[in-house]
Amino acid sequence: AYLYITDVLMQDRGKSIDQILKKDQKVMVQVIKDTIGTKGMKIAMNVNLPGRYLVLTPFHRQVHVSKQVEAPEEHERLMGAVSADLPSHMGCIVRTEAEGVSPQELSHEVRYLLKLWETIQKKFDHATGPKLLYKELDLAHLFEVIYHRILVQAIRAGQKVLEFRRIFEKVIESPVGS
Image 1 (cartoon, rainbow, N blue to C red):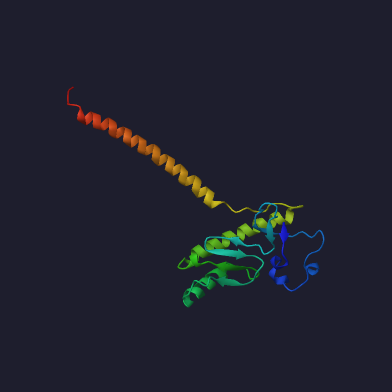
Image 2 (cartoon, rainbow, N blue to C red):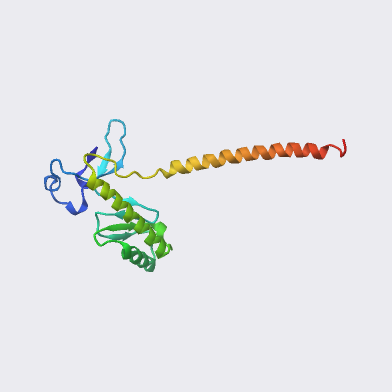
């Protein structure tokens, strides 16, 4: 894996790499890009946890709202709703998808992501050596599997309907009492 100096923690920008990282120092990283051919994976120390409505940024203190949320009152509402549940030492990015979402739903997602972060942090604290702390679900694959199952079930049901129709048509075509 390779780590560019620009992908080291934001609060350490401007410092030399020797001031930030020490030999044998334990650091948490996130894979940004998987291995391609002979090129190693790209990693970053600016870990983030994406949710449906927001992205938790544990090592940043700011809350940002998507620029695509244009209405100033909606921008302020989202900032307030998310900031209320977020610890002051953490930040997040509020996605465009959050527009119009209730404060309760936003609060629920903030608490979920904070709990997830707490779990990851505990694993990191107890880890000795390199360890996978968290892997996002591959939802595209999950939906593909679900879609395939539904499609197969629909085809089977369709075959049963056609079979029933053939039998029903034979019954209707045959004269009564024959």
